[in-house]
Amino acid sequence: MSDLKPARTRMAPSPTGRFHLGSARTALFDYLLAKKTGGQFVLRIEDTDRKRFVPGSEEEIIASLKWLGIEPDEGPGYGGPYGPYRQTERRQAYADHARILVDKGAAFPCFCTPERLAAVRQEQQKRKETPRYDGTCRSLSPQEAASRIADGEKYVIRFKMPYEGVTVARDLLRGEIATENRHLDDTVLLKSDGLPTYHLAAMLDDHLMDITHVLRGSEWLPTFPLHVQVVRAFGWDEPVWVHLSVFLKPSGKGKMSKREAAQAMTDGYSIFVKDMEGLGYTPEGVLNWIALMGWGVAEDDVMNLDEMVERFDVEKLTPSPAAINFNKLDHFNGTHIRRLPVDELARRIKPFFVDAGYEVDNDTLLKITPLIQERLVTLDDCIAFGGFFFQETVTPDPQDLVAKGLTAAQSAEAARRSLDILSGVDSLAHDIAEPPLRALVEEMGLNAGQVFGILRAAVTGQRVSPPLFESMEVIGKEKVIERLEGAIGALENLDDTPPKG
Image (cartoon, rainbow, N blue to C red):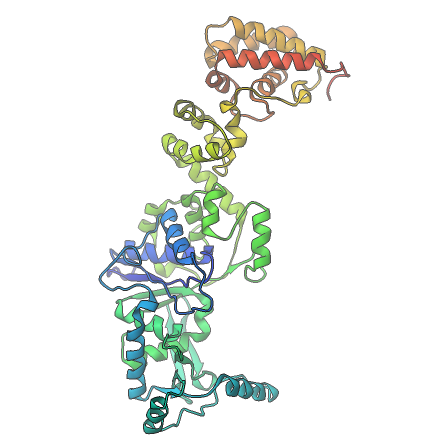
């Protein structure tokens, strides 16, 4: 990175809904930049939009960041020297600074009613003009404005955007962006209830909290010239602006909508971080996946958080839109599952077994974890691949007990002879149990897939399982024999149909 000065970055979500992948990626890049440069990652809750406030949103934001492992250095619940970190608790600072802009002539009180503004917009639309404030209160004298305020008239404070000239703002990823001021509006900075809009609050807080880099979504590009003008009106140094790439729906056409989000859930996916844990995803897999959407490194690079910090360069981020690819999520999740130490993976899959109603003993759990680790894409796959280890009995589909090319009677005979062998061996360890069973396969003129397939269905209750002999050893000789006897009984009760094709 060209600039290794300690960076102060901030994640500044509004508690107006669920914490989604786009916000998580912004937080991740903020975290990586701060840690790479020895700086701080700040969480600030921008809760001034009280109409859209959703109870529990702030808690979900904090819990999601904690689960992902990218916890802030400062923020609500974390403390820090620049608090408070909720904007509703910083109300007086916004009012004071809005007044500073008014005194500088860079902002003005506006007494226009919502009804009047709506009428103005209608007239502008009829004339096919871009709706914008018409400047009615812009030229009021300070004395008249003060008098109307003293009389108790409701007002907002608007920014006085220059009518002429060009605003040139620099984005780290996109370079210089020039906008003619005549296309910009006298935007509201302070609402009539005394709370700020984002356009004042975020700029002020970034300044007061010494934020050096503002990473945010590209949806803020249309108001980027306004924000730069506000910062310059105060005479402050600008932060480094970084507008990140937008996430597109899996088809690559348009942004994710509620409809696509609902479809993702029916397919076993989610765009909300809090859901990821319940769906069996790992924080490592999720972080790796979202990091590569908008970061100019190879799209198959496998990295944990420490490796990301080591390699991160904010200038290598890309502005190109990135389509959400849930297959990539599965790929990275499975890869990171296989990177986990066995005891750590066992700890993570245990809650899924417990939630499924199994009584889990840790000794057995530690034995089966390496057997199923290579097969897991999500953590909850452990049920499909390992639930039978914790069942007293299994009930295979009788048809699964019939080997390909054999009748039920022939399959029963292979099962009986396998039972005789397993009953007579001292141990079901791979090196003890497998040789005599392979000899049986040769003697009966069958193939290993036929005999071992019968055994697999009998002792696991399913056609697909972890390695057969290792599984039998964990299940234990007594249960294996019991299950095999039950399978023989089931085969004997089947009609002796022609050989299974």
